[in-house]
Amino acid sequence: MTDDDLDRRLRAADPLPDLPALRPDRLDQLLEDTVTSTAPQTHRRPRALLLAGAAAAVVAVGGGALWLTTGDGDPTVLTAQPVGGPAASCAAITPETLAGSDVAFAARVTGVEGGTVTLETTERFAGDVADTVEVVQGDAGDVVDGAPLELQPGTTYLLTADGGTIGSCSGSGADSPELRALFEAAFG
Amino acid sequence: MRTAPDQRRADLERVVRTVVEPVRRYLHRRTDAATADDVLGETLVVLWRRLDYVPADPVPWAIGIARLQLANAERGRHRRGRLALRFGRTEATAVPDPTEPVAGRLDDVAVVRAALGRLRPADAELLRLVTWDELTTGQVAELLGITTNAVAIRLHRARGRLREELGRPGARPDTGQRGEGTP
Image (cartoon, helix red, strand yellow):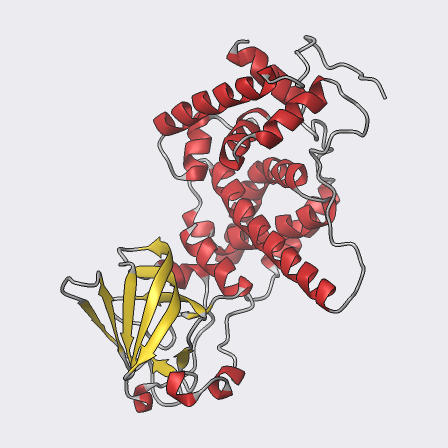
């Protein structure tokens, strides 16, 4: 059986060989809906997280530093530089803003000890990220947007760092369909 | 004088007219009509927001966005399915598989679909992209983020595996045309 024969059989098995084209009025409506679409539902770190879990197992990022380590190599130190003033709030996170990040990855918290959170990288979207990531708790007073990201054991997060910094407005947060859609749109 | 927003909208319209049918067909082949419509809308919104990044050939790029949006939609559906079970609701959450053969028909179409279903998902999807969605190897390379050469190699292997599946006992030989089958 030649490739052409095989492809012919495959094409015959197409479940949708004759989908009618979209009606012009429907296409116009679709365009209208698209350009008038509101900002994407941005990931807002849920306030409930601030109260959830044991306090000892909660670490705030934003005024802290991130180490990306391989376990025995010299860690790459990324310092935190909170953006904005005390009253600053985060702008809407978009694929465009995320796409500018140096590193983007998914990681699950495997341990919290002495203010250091250890995460296991589960997925890489951008940049060179080691299998293990350590996040050192910063000074909560340095967090400027009023909504510090908290890393809790067993939870998977989508994280970005830009210019050596996990900013508190970086778009990082717990893995959720909304945030993941933005990550995948940014790095897909 | 055309304002910047007008120009932007015109740019969007030009891109959408190029990609909308390939994206619609891609989606309708892989999910139910309602989900396909929803995901199409979400795909166009992403396209609108990333209009400055549209490549010269926007079709594989747009299908790539649709592919991710569809995966998200499917994940959401699975999650709702679990919740429905937890609360003891019995509403159907299963979606008809558009590749499901017509009951009782054992024609070549059914044989090919069954063989396709036994392939590794990546192999089957590659074959669908090339034959059903009519993407070139270059477009598939763009979509999957691999080289054209890698696509050609994977395609060669996928066709080989499909031939093997079609040659297995129980798979009907090709009749040379789309048969009508028997009930």
